Amino acid sequence: MGFTIDLLGEAVITETEAESYLQSYFELITQLSNQAQKWSTIPEIDTADGEDLAKVQVSVKLTAFYSQFDPIDPEGSKVKVCDRIRTLLDTPRKNVQRYTLIWNNMPIRTLPYLSYKNY
Image 1: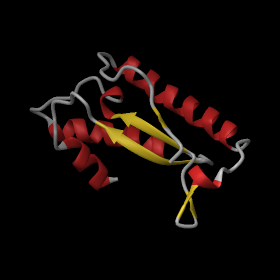
Image 2: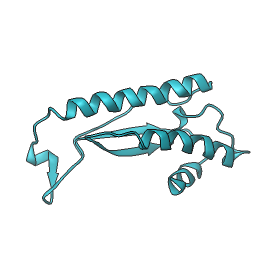
Image 3: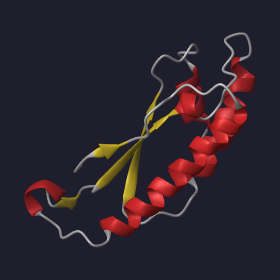
Image 4: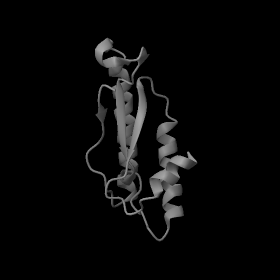
């Protein structure tokens, strides 16, 4: 992995703000994909054991995708977050091959596992 990148800010308080973060991730992925196509391969950092590594990794903060995380309604929170993650991960991308899901400060510790498991 050459590097990972994410967007600043992780807790949102409105659904409008959460949608804005999702759109910002789309823009980030598009711009990185376009730029990464122009990068030359440096074997010392772009390959391991004869395999190409992801030149770009995007870290996605789950708390940026839903403003109403609720420990009393983990299923409802999971559904909303999974919908947004699915939308993001299903977007065609060229050289962004890896995502890291981050749940810093998230009140529901099992939600990331449930989200990933159900994707």
